[in-house]
Amino acid sequence: MLTRVSLTGSLGLALLAATALPALAQQDRGGGLAQAEWAQNYDSAATMRVQRSNTPILSPQTLAATEQMVERYRDIVARGGWQAVAGAERLRVGSKSPAVTALRQRLIVSGDLDPAAGSSPVYDSYVEAGVRRFQARHGLNQTGAMNVTTVQAMNVPADVRLRQLELNAVRLRSYSGNLGERYVIVNIPAALVETVDGDHVATRHAAGVGKIDRQSPIMNAKIQEVNFNPYWTVPASIIKKDLIPKMQKDPAYLTDNKIRIFNGDREIPPSQVNWHSDEATRYRFRQDPGVDLNSMGFVRINIPNPHGVYMHDTPAKGIFGDDFRFVSSGCVRVQNVREYVSWILQGTPNANPDTIEAIIQGGQRVDAKPVAPIPVYWTYITAWSTPDGLVQFRDDIYKRDGAGAPTASMAAAAAGPRNFNPDAPDDDRTN
Image 1 (cartoon, one colour):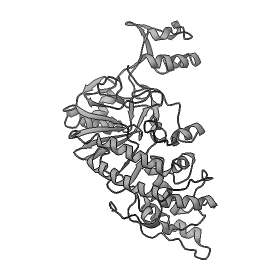
Image 2: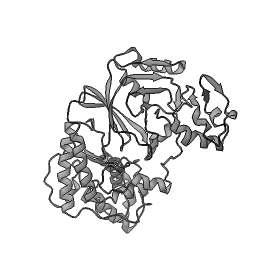
Image 3: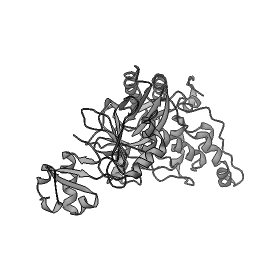
């Protein structure tokens, strides 16, 4: 593993953020290039694959690795950084274009492709593996094919990436104290949840976090309780921004989604409400429990805080496969929430997966407490490095870095990419 290297020449640059790679020289074998490339695909993909680190993002090891990466990126910037790629949005295996040559150079400088892979204009398996590696380091779906989002991320200048690393080293340093023996990290820009035991990541979960206009807060809290099969009481902000417009378009929306209206303790039918006024904001709206429809899915994780946000399941599981997961009203939706709940309740009778499933199927409200309250840290980390020398970057989605980086995922969302779902149902905030 490379953790300390002397950066001299192009090979030194290629080693940044990468482990030592064997030579990947491609050879012209008398017209057999395509066959040879397909035969080599498995080797190249395995060599370039990014392995998940078990080091928590909030740890002294991550801080040290990030500070070291700052020095490496200062060297990259001093050498002129990297050139932007153009005309690469539709490139994939088999493409032949001068843009592929430029793409190879871009990947070499950031350490995603070995210089020995050559300068061929053909998008071969080595380039595909390098693109997958780049996508993994930037939190993008690892398709191995170029698209708008990948190009946008590649064209963030090296000096901007350096400023991100410098700023986030300061953020990481602020978490240098004792965070607890067991704790949870929510990294908002990465839309990712980590559970930590000791100094190792126990589980990781993709997350759905707050929209740009309904941001998830940066905060410290504690997990106090898990609510199985909860009701969802719709907050006033969502009644006004979401429910009223939906009812104007579809009068059956509330009934179809098992949302009831209450005036005090008395239930009233939707037909009695004037949906072309603000009358609805005077009432209480409550969604029945149910994994398939309830916006919280089958479980809510209570973390008392002044922002009125929490963590929960969701019936909209498709968002977890998207590049763009800034879809909630401030709360955090958790992928594989059964595993997450089992970890929270470790040491209690309700931690057993069979017990959890029985509670879900029973459909009744059940409240369960962890052995002790568990610290949870909602953070905003857009750049960091792991001890193996792998550097990660995420979009500054809430524009808190001030580094001037364009937001790749937002650009892709505006272009309507395959992995963007702007219509994922709202969930959550209780304030």
